[in-house]
Length: 352
Image (cartoon, rainbow, N blue to C red; front, side, top):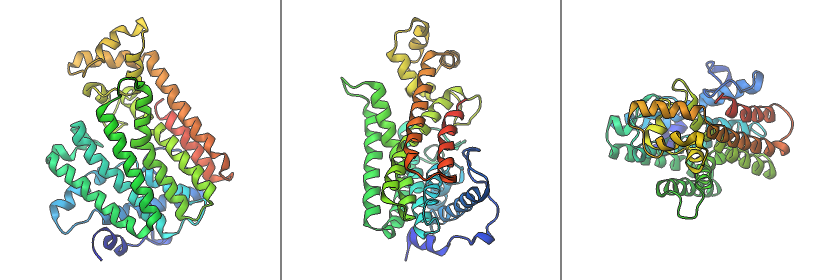
């Protein structure tokens, strides 16, 4: 046995009584205290151990490149949702951790590719792989992580392979549509939200589906949790986009206003460009192109923070969080549903 499966199987989950205490999450304080929070923290520790094993390689450079973004940290949002969904069934089923690792490896792989396409210099507060090495190394490292995810996936059965393949198709379709942009006749805002659903929502939805299905949760609940994952995944990406504007620090993993500087039109900017409010005329002029001048960048960021378009985007974020919460009606009352509802609150309040 070689590759990710051998590394994974060589490092089985640590028994609960031997686990060191670990933070329940790196994405905020919304997680519950008590037994559920402890179970999720323990599961995340097992995911982290398995991730480290899964990016191992006998070749030192491959090992260093593959571990680069993982070592830089991250929210581990997708595996966390896998673990939380699994709490509605047999959370100790071995496939739960394995599927959580598959989702995080897939996510990490897309980040390597995204940074090449975006010509990003920083990811998670560290130099991006394409900056530290080359575009070719970053692309091939992403491919290596996809291969490791596929190796682990093979032991989860043909249905899991099919779900992952369809998820990957949506990830790629979303990236293509983002690259090409809206075609004539498309509404730019609708196009943007559809891209987010494909690029972000699809994998978050699969993370929830895997956790629930491998824990043996009832099929109807699996579908509800999958739909929840897609809605909350889009909400989380929208909140990241807003954080890039409203944050005074690097809470989004990059310097505030990075999207503006690079000419990336996120939802608030799309609302500015589509609007005709005279109060936003100067802002509309500024955001029509990448803002490379420091003074103009600072002016645009200040205007955008005070704009009606930013509030419109925040309302869309709230709408997606509410739609996600509405999916929880089929989930049994208890700690898990409360935690999922708290997550809906968190994706909104983290931008406040």
